[in-house]
Length: 147
Image (tube, rainbow, N blue to C red; front, side):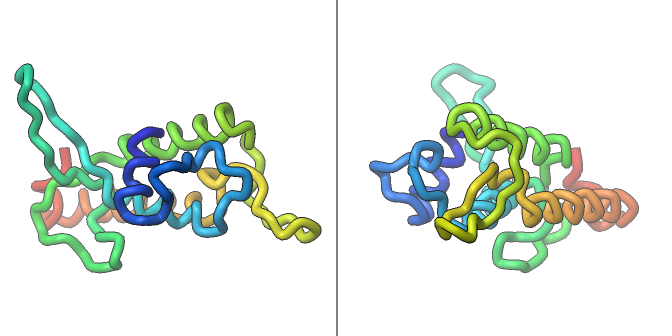
């Protein structure tokens, strides 16, 4: 959850003084930010004390700008993407008390209610990601990057 917040702040989607999990009115773009975060997730490896290596270990063979990555670029598993989404579902559901309700626009107040990580957009992205993963396994160009 902290990684998501720092990613939002680094990309200018959220002020450094605010937390996405505690703001009153959730922005409409929140599901799209979740998708972009999963697409561009960074992983820090640290097998030696006082040494960390940062590698781009995205979950998708497509960049957030829509371009395909170079063949052979390492990508994480679909399971890793599910864990990222799950952590946000928990964060919004438990910490922000949004539960597992659908992400819908309240016509009376004009605010978005529910959990953005269980939105239709994120669900469709996860289905499409799974299809790309299956396709990448059957396509030898991208198999070298799959763990």
